[in-house]
Amino acid sequence: MSATDQTRVAKIVDVTESRLIAVLDSREGEFPMVEIDGQQVLVGQLGSYMIVRQLGLQVVVMVTRAYQEERGLHMDPDGAMRGSPEKLSNRGMLSLIPLGQLSEDQVFTRGVIDFPTPGAAVHYILPAQLDLLFQKHQAKQYEIGVLPSLTSKGVCLDPSTLFSRHLALLGQSGSGKSWGVTTIIQKAVETMPNAHIILLDLHGEYVWKDDSGQYHSAFELDQMNHFDARELEVPYWLLTYSELIDLLIDPNDDKAPTQKAFLREVLLALRKKSNKDLQGVQISIDTPVYFSMIELYHQFKRANEQTTDFGKVKGPLYGQFDEFLIKMQSRFNDVRYDFMFKPEKRKDSASLVGLLEEFVGLGERKVPITVIDFSSVPFDVRPLLSAQVGRLAFEFNYWNPRSDEFPICLVCEEAHNYIPRAAGSQYDGARRSMERIAKEGRKYGVSLAVVSQRPHEVSETVLAQCGNFICFRVTNPDDQNYIRGLVPDAESDLVNILSTLGRGEVLALGEAIPIPTRIRLHRPNPAPHSSDVDYYEQWKGGARDLDVSAIVNRWRRQGR
Image (cartoon, rainbow, N blue to C red; front, side, top):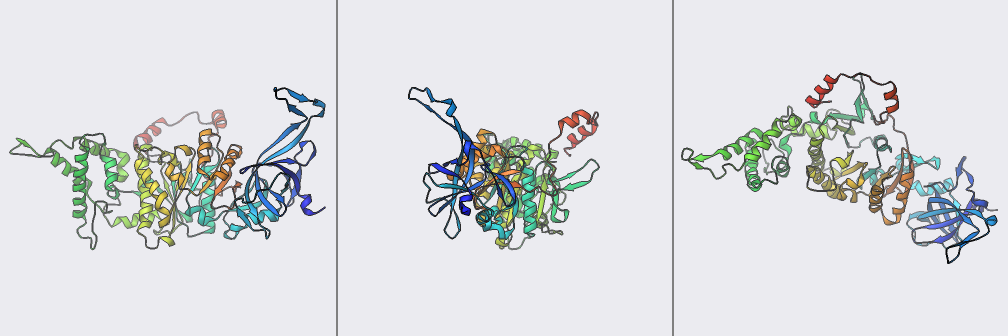
């Protein structure tokens, strides 16, 4: 018996353009155990690979369903079951999705041109054949996990394509997304020490303090900068004209057109006035230079109260800015916006250099990771700050003549919170910033890694631009259907596997991996602070008293 005959386990009985059905050779439908690379493996595990052979044709397939079918009964036209129960038997069945072909010289290509016909033999895959499938990216050593069905085989992705084509990490809460983000970043820094990654940490999962006040991190401290989002200080004078409109002008106010026109005039004048000593700079309404917000307020106030002829005749703009002034004053007096409206470090145009150096890891400590902690920022302020972070990343490399040597990846945790699918809300600024990166960022070396537990609530424009998907467990039918619509048609049926994934397991799809692959991610070391609260242990023997006055004080100070 040849080695090929020894690996045969089934034969094809049904063929369509997107699925093959095979019946096992074993009696009574038993799914056999085989030894591969010294490891006992059960044939037919979901997400495992097999090879269909027929007259020199070799098609690589993935198992998406394993089941048993009863034989010995048949249904008459009238719907009645006929046959003898004594003659009933089972046969094992496999549902297979074709992924690609192996040529005669054992080169793997994605996609199937020549399909097998019924009767073709199905073989379990050998380690050497697995190597052929995944050897394409092994030289870069970006290994993020192993095959669950054969844990001796590591899976390498192409980091160039993974980060440059935009990445989406999707999965429900508790499926291991934070672990996945940490593993991907840790491995990136390990294999590419000059990486430039900016992580928006919405819940303080990646850098945190314990009860004693000691800081802990999911990344080595000498590899990252950590900033409280408010201490980073993204000042108001970096806002563009359209962003200031979103912040200060009510679109439903019937005087909004007048307010916008006057804001354009005053903003340009103040930017020029405050920076008249800048040499060789043609200042526009959006040039990132300092201007006085207090002076802006006073100019609106004077125009709003202007009269002539000793108060007898009202000025042309009298009373046009009542709503504007109220909204501006409320923003300015809201302590949650102090990081923007009352900067302590960024008080002149020259301070922009220091902000950007800290932002991209080029300050005194040149590091590959910048973690921006949003956990201390109130929820309704996060969209505004997220928009600024996204725009700064894009603008930095847009104007960087060496952007192709300095690619940046912006990791957006909990993206559904500030990159929404629907327009017309307080999140429009953040959505526009991220959509601009999604559509144009590749040209300037700026990419997105979008992380979400509610993919159907994330901007369609952003997800449609993603060329790679790392999908964790998803059981919600709406989210499954949405993901199914995002991936190529030939791979859409694989989405059914998502509900079966364990914690830390993913289905990787896209341009960065040779074939769709079920992966058990390597456990990150250190791990993020993302474990669920243990209700049983805490309710059984946890805290029985709390300092409520301290909680109230934190609430009032808006500081965790």
